[in-house]
Every structure is written in C-alpha cells, then in structure tokens.
Length: 118
Image 1: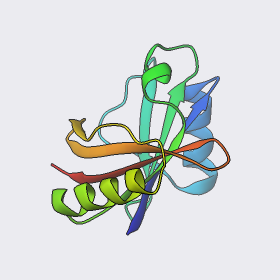
Image 2: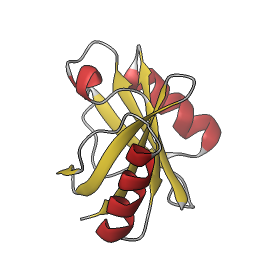
Image 3: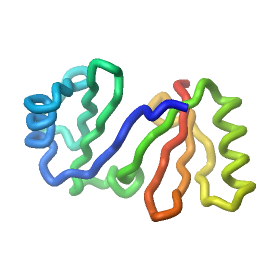
Image 4: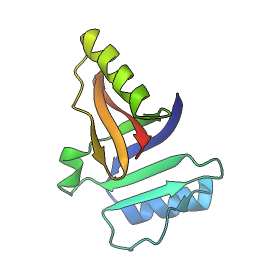
C-alpha cells in the first residue's frame, strides 16, 4: 500500500501554493487558475498534496484526508470488506475524479481515502 496524497483545507489557496513551491519544491499538477478553489501539487516522487479553499462547497463532500493507493479494484473491494467487517465506518466504493475509491473514518476522527486508478 502506498501513501499517495494528502488533501488539506486552507484559508488562502494561492498563498499556500506559492509557499509550497518556493520552500518545498512542489509544482502544480497541470495548469492552475489563480482563483482556483482546489490546487493539486506534486513533488519529484509523485506524491500529491492538494490544497482546498475552506470557503467552497467541495470541502463538505471532500474533506481533509490522507489517501492510500492499492494496485486494483479487487484489492480495493477486499480491503473495503475487511474494514467494514471489522466494524469501521466506510463509504460505498465508487469512481470519483478517475479513481475507484472509498473513505474510512479512522480512530481519532480523521478520514482516509483508499483508492486505485480507474
């Protein structure tokens, strides 16, 4: 299992993006709009760091979380079933933004996305 990304809510997406680029060498994934409410940054290893404006509706449906990726849908389904059987609160699996995934509420109150491309 690979830690793939972190998604954080921030008050100022543009300033946070500039800070991460200047001091941590993270570059935007694709073209970015200066007024964008969501920006994905990446490093040389392919780790993705997503910044999301706290003032957007998207925050409600896509809260701060960390994301782990598995190899394929079968692995996702098996891991989903294991967590559900062990009594954890998990969302249904579905395809979102090109990723087959689900979310689990971890002890301590934080969210984890578990997904695979496609």
